[in-house]
Length: 61
Image (tube, rainbow, N blue to C red; front, side, top):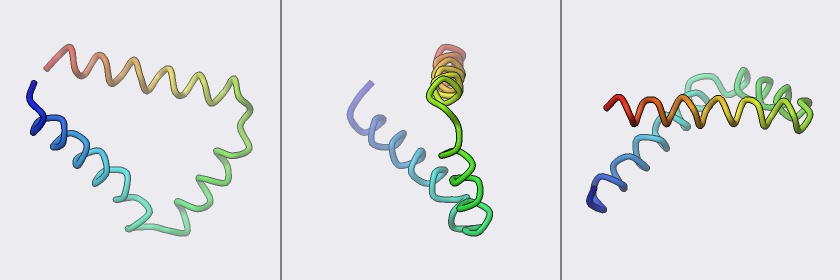
């Protein structure tokens, strides 16, 4: 993997991350405030699920 691929992947992540607040800022703000209500264990669980899903995607590709 070269550095161009890494920068391309980072750019894609930033585009996806910015899409929801751009399209629906009110809904994004409400969702974000609900996320802040979660306890640490719940956040860790969602983080772990995200890491596993990303790892599986990388392995499949």
